Amino acid sequence: MRLVSALLIGVIFGIGIALSGMMNPAKVLNFFDLAGTWDPSLALVMGGALSVTIPGYWLVFRRPGPVQAPRFQLPDTRLIDRRLILGSATFGIGWGIAGFCPGGALPALGTGAPEAFLFVAALIGGLMLARALQARSQAPNPAI
Amino acid sequence: MATDFTPWQSLGGGALIGLAAVLLMALHGRILGATGILGGVLRFADWQDWWLKAALLAGMALGPLVVVMLTGQTPQVQVPISNLAIVLGGVVVGVGVSYGGGCTSGHGVCGNARFSRRSMVATVTFMATAFATVYVTRHVMGV
Image 1 (cartoon, rainbow over the protein chains, first blue to last red):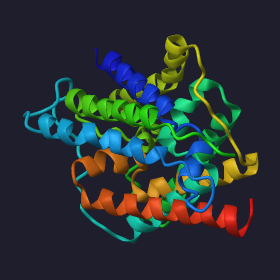
Image 2 (image 1 turned 120 degrees about the vertical axis):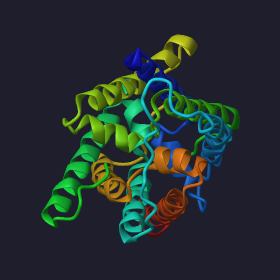
Image 3 (image 1 turned 180 degrees about the vertical axis):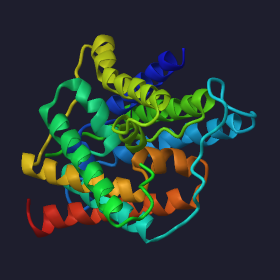
Image 4 (image 1 turned 180 degrees about the horizontal axis):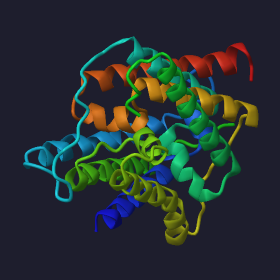
């Protein structure tokens, strides 16, 4: 049952990404192109998502725990450090170059678009590269 | 390449993304972050965790197929840039989300919804550099 509900949650997410335009690099890049062919649609994606998650999380966290797992697993670090800021800044640069973010590209695999496969392969390469770099510097392993 | 403003699809799609995030927290107690899901599938330490993330990932890829079944139309993936830019962007995104601890879904949707200061800082940062990058590539470099 755990895996069935996870699969269905993935499907809901994938439909949402497909409808919203987040898996369409032309639309994503136009959202960021204020000085050119600006398309404001994607502001409504985050607005629509937060208008559900803010009250939804508030209700969920009033319960003692999740239904199909022993406890809520939330990130425990509150550190705002160089790693968070430089990592996020780097992510934004890559998003601006390719027009795909991970949440847009993973559901896009289901359309069979070759560019989605190319992006996800490169994304995996980047994740592995970061893991190797962090292992070498003997810093704690990345969270992800 | 100009694209049409799609307020209702984007708002409705966003609400479904939010619904998926709330259900994952209510049932499994997890943040719905695409980076964490992909990273978990690439890490073979904890099999219970691996199967959960593999099921989420499989569901995500099935999403567009359900859209085709319901509407008869394949969701658009229009790529106005070169394959080289896709690969370069992919590697840069991978390094960034690993160090930054999340992406648009994990920080932007889930973290902000629980008013995490880390996620708010991350979201403002990656949005700012994405706007700056597109300005530079399109209006300075002319790609």
